[in-house]
Image 1: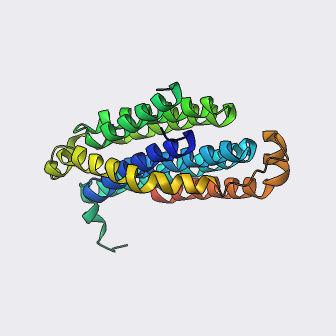
Image 2 (image 1 turned 30 degrees about the horizontal axis):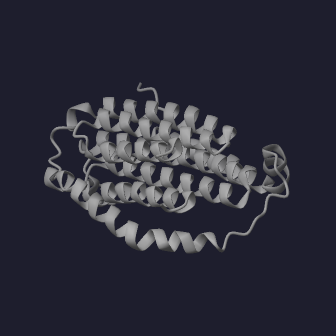
Length: 102
Length: 162
């Protein structure tokens, strides 16, 4: 059996793959954001796992709090763009974003 | 199988479920379950501050944002014909990724472990957050202000019509 750090990172890789696959195959803007969230969750778990390995849990927690704040702002901005785009074009398809009209 | 590994399996399963669900509302709820799993993992790593932040902000606030966005675009949901075959193929892709990662990524992570350098001179979160990473707080405040500015400029206040 492998040790804990490598096993943790194995599952982190799988979670990251799930998020990446979601972003690759979906045309729905909301699903793109969900995939981004899943990827950022895996990055967060990677930070805390590395922090636990090196005995730097306080620094890892500080970085995670920063990450969470940035994540919230990204999701709020992305969802507001989605709703505005839906009101303008009546579509949540990601290809409806390619019209650069002011 | 330890509790720790079980939590990771739960989180990975919730992530796969969040991608595969057809209903967007269920996807958002599964994303909340991913957040809860991540927060339990953080508690298990003895990182309570980050876990509380994760549980309150990611599992709470972001879920509320997603559910409200889903309720705003509810009618459009069924019109967009995503190719469902790609989502049904996801367990196959994840299985292949799991096998490949087991043989290629795990030895790499084990070799990475030998490079770990032990730090941890300061072991209180307050000292790290307020002294060492003080500049991060400025970044956090400015990105929060940027978020408010983005939302304010996307949804401008309507002028009164005369």
